[in-house]
Length: 293
Image (cartoon, rainbow, N blue to C red; front, top):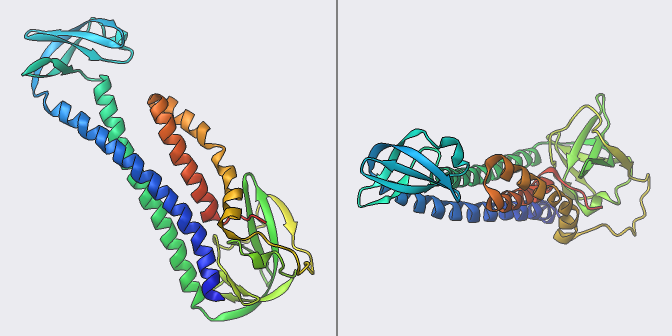
């Protein structure tokens, strides 16, 4: 029973983590391809001269220097018309040139940022999961004590979580990952408490989804009945978890729009940020212990 409970608790988190890692790997791969192409193009521009920006038209500026001229894609190029600037160009093909602030340089920076951001998100997600897992395993090995608890559901914003209200000299509230046994848990009920974090109730191990707190969690509270109906059918399986986690997909397009506006990356940036935000939303629900009951 303990093994099955552990598998149930881990499966949801592993799936959500896998989604984030897959999305991050895809974004990092395409960002790296774009960065490599831009870097190769820039590496061919080995010559340097000082030139002047003479005009702006069709999203590109006309740049002239003593040994050549070129049209350089430049967003809002009208603000640099008439100014002198450093020019980097390919000596074999002077029409391939770039100046500070040109679109090519911005796209190269964005592509490299996409790689580093994706790698950083993936590492943080994996690290957070490992820390949570190690703390739970350490608590399981601790000596058990008997405690009286009540299961409550608390909705705060988009998140609905299960908490165990632990009686004692100092009342505590422990957030826990959802398990179907919570739905039919009497209130109150005596359980085994291991390490102050892991609860064994009715032979089922219930793992913590955060640290215990000494203040009542914020949000709308719903208490378990004193004697729940044993025939109550509790939601089970990953599909039930994903249905309740789907609410975290709602903010993703808005996050993507904000990112595209700040970064100036347009539709591509919006799609990329939306997908990453959606994957992180699913992971956040799993990591925090969303409750589908």
